[in-house]
Figure 1 (cartoon, one colour):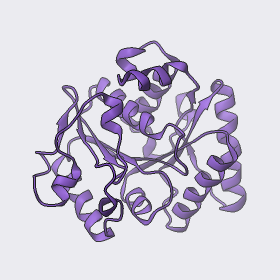
Figure 2 (tube, one colour):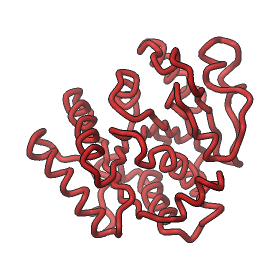
Figure 3 (cartoon, rainbow, N blue to C red):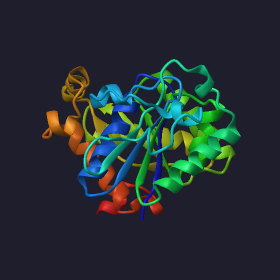
Figure 4 (cartoon, one colour):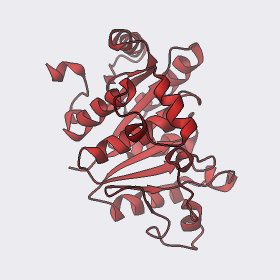
Length: 256
């Protein structure tokens, strides 16, 4: 069954777009049809990391100049991209009703695909609206006070909207699997203590020089560094998503 997956972070600069692209690529690599939507509507850059230069963006569709299929780009046999627009404040502040219409059009047009939404950082009304609409939510964060605080802010708002179910943490740039799990447990303890509810664990992603190198080269990590730790971590997360583990709790306990 296809899924609509939102990937977000409380603050920028934690690897969210790279992770969104890589999870989309990993799902494609697993034989799923995938649509990646650059939903950082005003400051998009997924196309840069994929090394493509689309002529049309989502702005052309929203403004009524092109159809949704016309602004959709083929990345490989199974992966498509709807690129966002950069420097367009009107898109970043799209009314929530129009955003709902856009979401419905995308999900109905690509109803047989896994749809990965790469959201903007932060807790804007637009971001929170899309997060609540999706089937699963991955919250990416790193071991820095600002990232932890801002990610907790996202989780708190989701909890207030009764949307903490099917929300999963992804600690990024961790030293190893053990430190990643401990990092998750710290954040989960915060949620249990102050929200009275746990949050799921999707898996951690290692700090890996291959990530920086693939971004500099503007080539996907699965082709430039297929043996890297980070790609292995991303494939593990994508496999859990593809296997439907997230229907209950995306958690390592299900792996044993």
